[in-house]
Image 1 (spheres, rainbow, N blue to C red):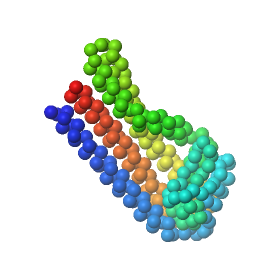
Image 2: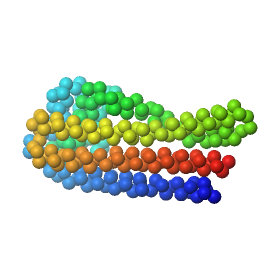
Image 3: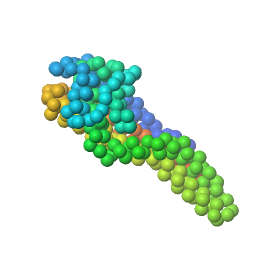
Image 4: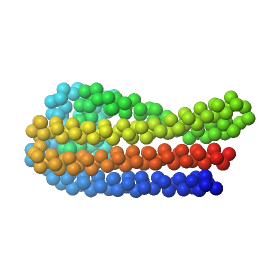
Length: 241
């Protein structure tokens, strides 16, 4: 009875994480909207600032524009820093902060930042794990209750593999958080050292960037809760069998 209760209650476990994610998303949007209305004193476009930051740090990275809003990203494989159209041409505090943050990722890549390399190497495994984790664990549960000892052992191995695969998304979220915080720290330092922003703008951009970091904290919380739920579901299935 207890395991049946956990099975159905497990869906509620992830609710706080979902609510926190919604809060973080709304907070980021409102913060970006506010500081997107404030232009920097230099009035230089975000794309131009990003290009100069890359140049100053010896990064062989090109800067291009992509469709969408807040679709800004850096691709370590292609060495391309892509800024959304709304960021690329803008000279707002928010846009320059976002562009500098992505430049921070490019500098991380250029410096051989370990956690960025680790995150990139995890991507294909996380994608595979999201599809195979639960099926493998479920097959393992049924094999575990087979009559043959060898089959039971295989079942236990499959369960362990399923748990490991599922936990990869949590590890990915755990690695991503310091990578993003480090990119923001690099961005602010590069902007100040290069004379691109004032101290007041630095405080404004710090607020923008560290508010954006809330989304990565939320992703980590949600991932941990989903992993906990996965373990509960697995335990309840095994107990039921």
